Image 1 (cartoon, rainbow, N blue to C red):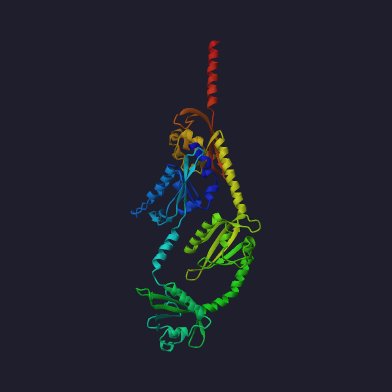
Image 2 (tube, helix red, strand yellow; image 1 turned 180 degrees about the horizontal axis):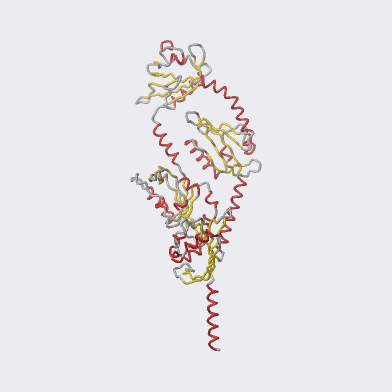
Length: 543
């Protein structure tokens, strides 16, 4: 089984480690054999710290949360994959990360994950690895928790600048105004009048039908919160642009009994809005001259604008912003919408690769979409700006690299030489071919220093030999060395003879970066020499 484990061994090249996803590779014994750089970064760990370790030794439970059994839930999923031989997607899992403070003390960071585990089979159908994929959703979970804490709070604006609070008794038709009425609009409560008509009379005639209709719709739907923007007549005869928000209170029978709210004078904001029109035109001109497709969206994720490049590529009707998802490949659309929703919710950078249809021939090309939130001074998102970059050619190049990596795997697998790559002055084992398992058995090789992997060779001066090769950069040959060899991987060990070569590997600057150990079996040659020597002796005795 172990011989075929390495057909898709992720440590064979840098491509796996450079993948943007959070991936970890485990043996059936739950020992870590590789991870992407993104996974190491997200889990606050290093390759040396987790390679070759039992997963739960590298990532223990947080002792400060005894009621949580994160490790137990995760192990259940891994055992399920091994037992059922099929992928297993876990629900949201809190699994805190161990890390050290500057003073060296250990503590745990609260983290939430969306994990899944999948089996990796060899050519005989045996599970040789478990591929673990994780998504760090800590920020989304914490944002949702904060949102839930705040949903019961009425976000009234009475404390804002230029705001006037009000309360309307619906049953008695009595309007009560707050202290800011005189300062903001120039009226006293007496000048405004006691009834609801006092408000109706001061809404701009052009705005009143729209505002009144929106209130009626909110009442008919049983909504508790209504919000509208309109022009309100001030005491000096001018109109102020205002934002009005009301909260309706219902009795036990569902009748509306009163509404409380606030009106904010937006006049200064409206003037600023007019002054921004020119800069907005310049901004759109910039987007139109970008070599990429580009877009803008409001804080809630509604697309406001596409540049001409989008319409030219997709064939979408110019000026249309709804229905853009129809131009995304059907297999990618769900992931796109989910990722976009998560980004809007968290206000974090939005980045995803997916396929978009070309209107010229109906084919799909892969694009990298990247969206960046723009913030107001208060820290709230005011606009999203995004671009699409065509990465189809890069994807094709990456696939070619993967094919070459697979070819390299097959070549190494068929090679008569057994190979082991040691890296750095500590001689960290980075790669072994299946034959090494026949020579030294099933042990944790990857990510461990060579003296720890082969402790039985220390008395033969093995560590000193490696140090000398690394320091002096000269190859060393050991011929016809007898090694116990499990040729069929069935537990029957026999003596075999190998020629070993310890070859220094040079880095980009010409310095020794590691050591490549190769072993070629010469058992038949040794045995033939011995038979020849025996025959020669027999001939001498006869003569």
